[in-house]
Figure 1: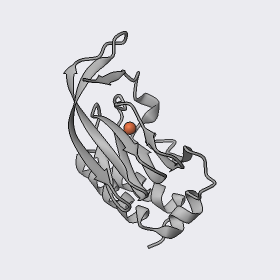
Figure 2: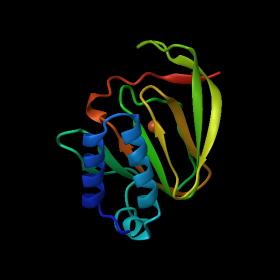
Figure 3: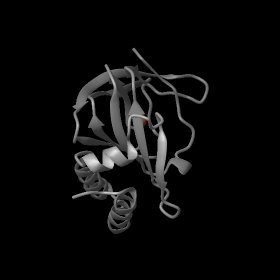
Figure 4: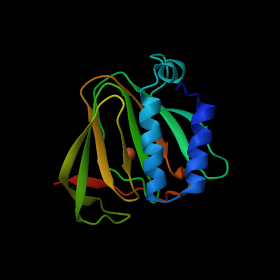
Length: 166
Ligand SMILES: [Fe+2]
């Protein structure tokens, strides 16, 4: 099936309205895996000339945001969570290694928390993974990559805390 931002956002919206809980997110994850395998979608919205981060859609009512990411170089991101928002990462091209971290020492507004590496997941093209509220993660990649990402409620996610690996 071929998707557009319009059909994708409508399906995400319908899914989250019918099932706002964890299983609804998993349905959205499975949907994103299908979209990640749709080469027409990638061609239309995630061309090589697209910016590193592009907001493709934000739902005016539920608040979720669909973002396209086109990375041209290797990149390593610091451990982070998305506050009180959840996020789904779907790989379109390239490979992302997603490290998951457990808290050793909680963060405060002034002091970064400390985290220990818990596991690493490899996102290959056509795979997607959910990160629930407060789950600390950090993507890294050795070369160029393309991803679709959905953030659950980015406008209400609250302040982000800083985390340092030990
Ligand atoms: Fe993230």
